[in-house]
Image (tube, rainbow, N blue to C red):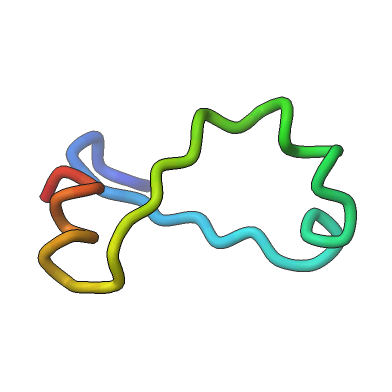
Length: 46
């Protein structure tokens, strides 16, 4: 069981990457994030 306060990360692989049109309508607007720990933490609100 996952606790309510847990943080979850989902990595999509496989067929979804071969057909981006299948998932693109379900995504929020993408926001570019610099490849630093500080910026990633800020982006995911840690």
